[in-house]
Length: 403
Image (cartoon, rainbow, N blue to C red; front, side, top):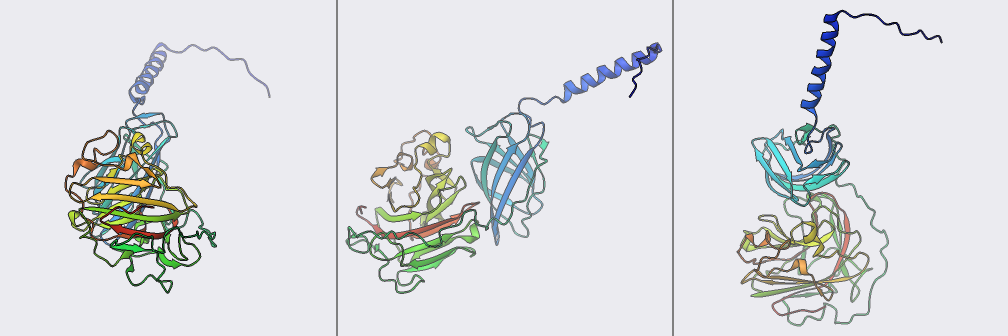
């Protein structure tokens, strides 16, 4: 290939002037449109996983920043149906008409390049609940929006043949809890479907979750109750007592042995659900979020502890693959709560009416003491997260029950 020397040619003065003016103009445009430190100049990716039932839904949302670092993220979208957001966690979510805005909390409000934040919300609808098709991060359209696959698809495979874990009973079958209102080791269950003092429940809707009596795994005696929990609200499944425990008080003690397979996920899940007359029948729940145990109140979605990094650090993970004794005490006269995992009283799962930073400020916003009327044991996921759990030696009493 031959090259030719560059030939120098004169430009008319007017052409040179126009070229210089255009260059200055491009520079001005670049200066005007340069992103500030709180803009996501290359967009984002959003994973929006929705689970719905008649008239209601939950959504687990994960936003990933594909641009430069963002200080104070704000995710916006527009609903195509008549959805109304009723509560949210790990973000502040507001709605005006069909337009929704989610703003990060103080502890997760900044996004590095490639960084992500996860939050959840719950809502209602009357006629339709279509998945949003477009999102924007700090005003810049997301170019990586996806619609997840069926959230009911298991992300982990539970063991098909669980290990034999029966232990010599240190207490009589049923937990050795004396005159408790509930004191059950499930030894009187004769079939695979719970009966007698227990029944199956799946409030609002029923899906793939299952509850069964298991004769191959037990904490004491020879039987326990197994829950095959699946992701998605409508896949929830509970073992519910047929007894009304509203009369237990003023202090209610609850004890159970629980064994689960998969570590608690970042998304919100519950494995204890107690209908609460002080909430008009909505539930007082024990479960997990951000991989640690938490209390959750359905009526206002308050959590104990607060879901800041410091708050979560005051809770504990629920160990997998072994039986764990979980106990809690509810004072129905003043709302105080205490929780023990094994022999440890968990500091982040304690409420005594005195505000403690990163733990109970949100929880204490409601002053009405809880009054549980029932007990459900199972699995309820509000986004993603499967688990296989076993429950044994369950007790509810007005006096202390020990492990």
